Amino acid sequence: MKLNPFDIYNLLPKKNCKKCGLPSCMAFAIKLIKREVGLEDCPEINSAMYIRNKMKLKEILREYYKSLETKLVIDEKRCNGCGICMISCPVNASSNLNVAGGKGFEKDDENLIYKIENGVVKVINIKKCRRFEEDIESRPCSVCVDNCPTKAITFL
Ligand code: SF4
Ligand code: SF4
Ligand code: SF4
Image 1 (cartoon, rainbow, N blue to C red):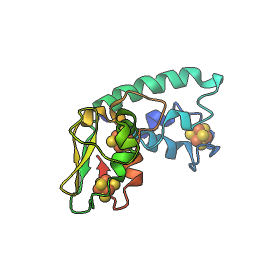
Image 2 (tube, protein in one colour):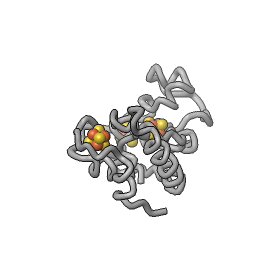
Image 3 (spheres, rainbow, N blue to C red):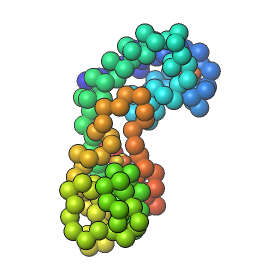
């Protein structure tokens, strides 16, 4: 499914007020399409005046995001096995206390997304990743990407 930034822009407040931290509503529209921001990042669209526009945007974005395939790519040559992604991932941390405490875990746990094996991170269960949630308001989780010191993790 293709999405034209103008279709999104036309539903935004078009105030170019920069409250979202971006220079214009068009820049915000482009980042919404890339899933780098969420509707909650625009305070104006969340005001009562734009409720209809917001509902329409949610409808369009939901269909569009559903059509995207979330692919997690690990560059094993870059990964140094530090485990930061494993302990910083909120899903890993909430499903396993040992992981949250930085101790790792003793056996495969199907609730975990990442584990370290032979000095390299491995993906166990990508379906648990918060990027698969249909949350239109928030920007998708990127904790592991942001915290990896070697930039070994990418979502396509
Ligand atoms: S906060 Fe909303 S209205 Fe203001 S520039 Fe960003 S997208 Fe446009
Ligand atoms: S944070 Fe990066 S370098 Fe460390 S284990 Fe994860 S992918 Fe590898
Ligand atoms: S994007 Fe978030 S939920 Fe998904 S693997 Fe990375 S840290 Fe975990």
